Length: 146
Image (cartoon, rainbow, N blue to C red; front, side):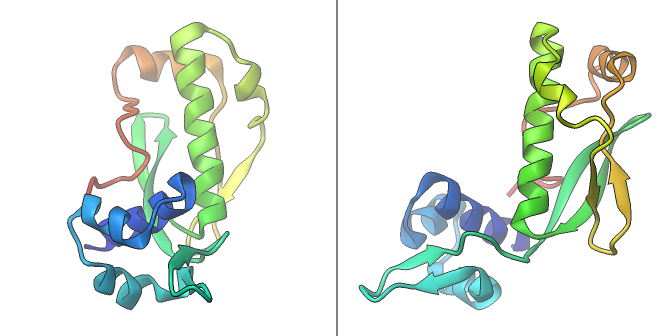
């Protein structure tokens, strides 16, 4: 259920969609979203609910590791956005060989929910090996699908 709630908030923010539509697509009620993730939402003067620019919701996401991917918990939309941009750069590199977007992430780290810094792998050889082995999946950034 938590994954669905976080997905609703993310969709509201990225797609500029209403709480009602995003919740319906995820198969949950707007009331549930407000109850579980109310801190990430804001009620406008016209009565409509919108996602705040940033939130501190907990998300379970995937990050590449030497032997495939691993799940990490991150707190906040900022960390999730950074990780999503990183995955897009990895995907582009594996599809085209163009590493220009990947360079931005050299030495870059994200913090997990416990404050532990995790370096985002940018070694081309490692990424090619993992991509060639089929262990890097781009179906979803989220560790569990809703």
